[in-house]
Amino acid sequence: MFPGSWLPAPDARCRYITEWTAVRLRWRLTVDSAEHTALTRQAAHCPDSVITVQTAD
Image (tube, rainbow, N blue to C red; front, side, top):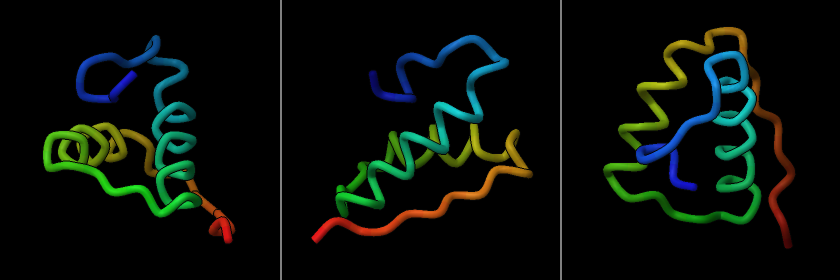
């Protein structure tokens, strides 16, 4: 589900947000402004999260 309309329990949110973002980056998927806002807002609560991806061919 889209991060702007649903998020898991607070203890799992950082993992969910980082994995969601990694998938978007890996597959070069675009995000709309609502999704970008939701991801940015939630990521602010995950300062120690690091996203490393290898883009798909």
